[in-house]
Length: 113
Image 1 (cartoon, rainbow, N blue to C red):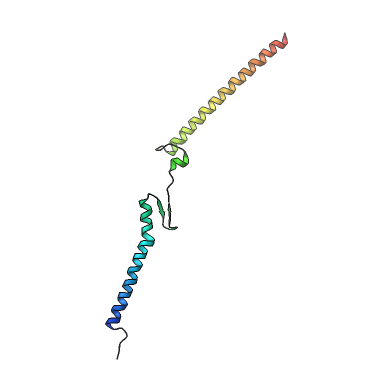
Image 2 (cartoon, helix red, strand yellow):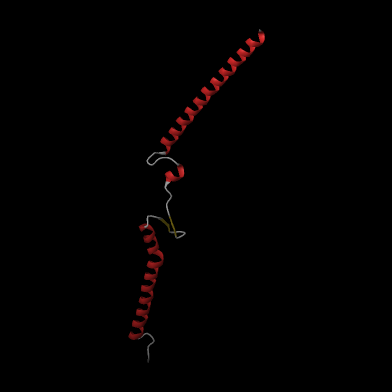
């Protein structure tokens, strides 16, 4: 009686399964893990879900604030600048109104004579 699973056949099946598993590990390494490592070496961000290697955007380039300045500090500086501009505008409007009033008074004085 001849058996189907002889030692020779078992060893061939084991070697085949082992070879397939080994090839699978190498393919997984090259296709799945290596791109993340290469992306990290370049200093970029790697998203595992979408498998995208993206270049990070420097926040001061977007916001326009100086490096090392927090959001609260930048907001306080912008608010102070805005208050200063409003004060300058109010002073300009007062000076313009005073000049207008002085011109009216001068014109009224000339027309009364």
